[in-house]
Length: 123
Image (tube, rainbow, N blue to C red; front, side, top):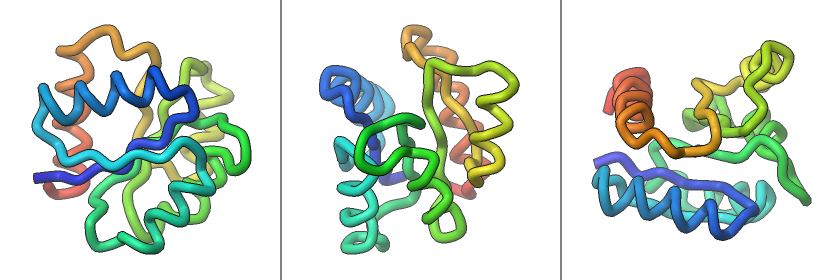
């Protein structure tokens, strides 16, 4: 089973997304509310984490910076409401494995996208 660290500063979105991933899709979920907390959690629990899904833009340490620091150690997927070409290029340049668009209102599309991500990481 894949273990995912979900990093999201909006606690309502974090709880909803974690619930979807855990209850409906069967993933083991850990959460952090900013990039700094996620970086600390990952460094202490690296063996538990198969994938990080992080919001791109957060206070303290952005998801982009988190991705830059960790993408060589663990696959990182960026999530954002910004999906224009400039932002997508920025996410890829930071080392993101993939991108998930907000809002997460299409459950079937989310499920399909996560299955494709799992194939990419060999889970």
